[in-house]
Image (cartoon, rainbow, N blue to C red; front, side, top):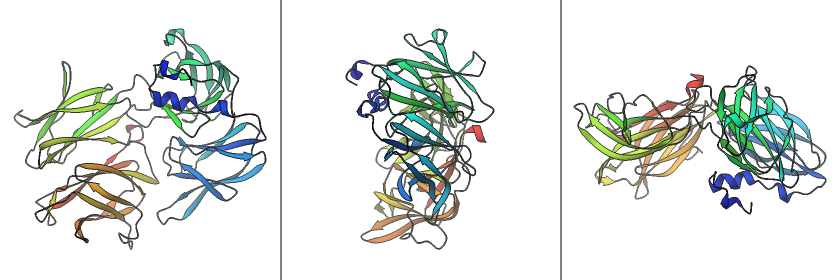
Amino acid sequence: MTNSLFKAALPLSLISILAGCGSDDSSSDTGYIQLYNGSYNSPYTRLFIDETERSGTDFADVTTRHNYSTDTYDISFEYLDANDSYLTISEQEVSIKSDKTQLIVMSGDFAEPIFTELSVPISSDTDEFNLGFFNTTNENNNYDIYIATDDGVFESATLFASAQYLTEPDLQTLEEGYYTIYVTAAGSSDVIFESPSVYYYDEASYVAMIRPSYATEKNGITLDIVTDNNYVTELNHQDAQGQLRFINTMDSYSPVSFSITRGTTELTTDTVANDTYTNYVELSPNSYSVAMYDEEGTKLADNFLMTLEREQSAVGIFYNDEENGPRMMSVEENLTPSSYSHTVSVVNLIENYAGQSVSEVDVYFTLNGETVEDTSNVVDGLDKYDQEEQVVDNEIYTVYAVFEDNGQQIVLIQQSDMDFTQEGNYILILEHDTTTSSGYKMTLERTITDSVE
């Protein structure tokens, strides 16, 4: 890691993660257990070893790597349901091997997940690293993996390995350095995935999980690089696009359209009524200037900056700041087809109540028979013009937006039968509405990849 600051193809954070900690391990009578969660619609899944909960992980991530003496252990995988009860997904025995990590991969549909045990060497030799590829996509997809050095173009890449569905990888040794990974369908020369140029450090082992991206690229793939640390480094396809859409929450402006500008290029959305989302606009990863227009083409707001990354989906929410006029908030959309739990991005646009300023609200998601004091699903102290995420179970909730006034809790909005039982994730906008009896409303939108719709 000494020369990492001089290797500029990657941000420092990514270099640090890929560096791992392989050089710190020496031969011993111990090994490790770790879980990689590749089940696309799973909830947060917990690893138990000999009936002790150790750590857990969401989709496309890993648990902590736990060190144990060489022996056989009973392990189980569990999750918490809406009643905070542990439910067992699977149980098995694992034999710890000296100087190896028993990497358990959970993949497929969480209704019937598949568990595959990989035995990965903890480290490699000086100036070398180990690399293997594990295909978790589906049984109809097999891949060829090509590796390129130096100029990093596909024409100079060499065939490194083939990755058949759920076949344990044969880790191969390479010299420390920069590499670009290309993936094609088995037997094809058409590139379907190109990684950035990544520096791989010596004395480490890397397993690249090939999984569906569940992002903006329909049927695209992503590589999750698992190393000898407690992180996953996600590598996105370098030719992948992103997508943007917009919503105007200001009742005084309707209908409206939006434009996205970069240099001399300008794209315009469809015209929509207020509180209605536009269709997506597909764009290359870049920064853009965004404007909003009324029905006659008069510019209502301009020069709002919006930055888009590869495979990122985002929405620009236009709202009225009581002190500064029209403003735009960018919210990243989670497109993963989650089934057992869902990420809700809560946006607070509420400014006042009964003539007094409301600086923050508390948002409670309650089940039938559950009070606001009972629920663990709470967004606490959400500031005005801000956003925060909350993970909720696959249930129907009554949602409260509550303002505290001198120790008294005031219910600003109460929405019953709010359904969070469809695959995907959600955006929940809290705002003023003079047409409702409360003077407020909640707008709920589901976000999900086109790959499963």
